[in-house]
Image 1 (cartoon, rainbow, N blue to C red):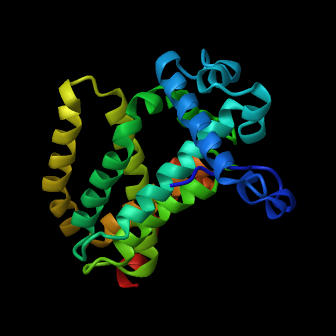
Image 2: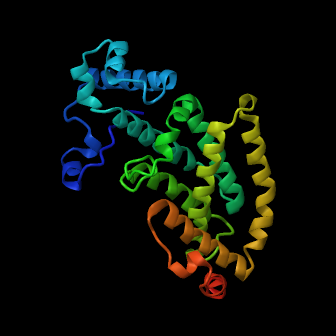
Length: 264
């Protein structure tokens, strides 16, 4: 897959140059960009994000700093290109998910995601501070919309297109909750020090065994309300989609319109 620079500038600029891609690239230019991209990722993996410099990347790739800056004006541009590429690869892989129940499709999608990320695990470990950054331009920030939206869409489809999909409003909430569960598992995998990350494999296997009980519980009105509440609270924490204050303090109605959700 070709590497495209991810641009978070205003829409007018993006319209002029999609994701910041330089116009009129030649085959040689694309090869140079790929070489710079791979050199930058290798250097970040070796030295960490802060210690890696773009000048060192240019030296390793055997090109001028000016050429490097043409394609990647900052280290962040390299990281966003990786984020974009991995989300594209995951979305393409997830298109092959087999029909079935949402709980099975969720674990299948989770395993696919870890498979896509595996080759870049060392680099991704160095980027954890960017992943959990509170800045709007962090990897989960509000300004980095495209890659996150692609991955979220996969988990939305995992539920919405399942053979046992719940009603639409609940399916949308459950898809977002599962997306955040997947983020937690990915973070666990990145810090997993067990040989070959076998603890992560055990965790995923445990989820596969546990989720049928969760799917059964989801038939109960109160549990459906809890899922809707969890979705709203996670939106407040991650995406600035704040629920009512009553929801956060526990003073609102019993549990968040559980009856209406169960009847939808």
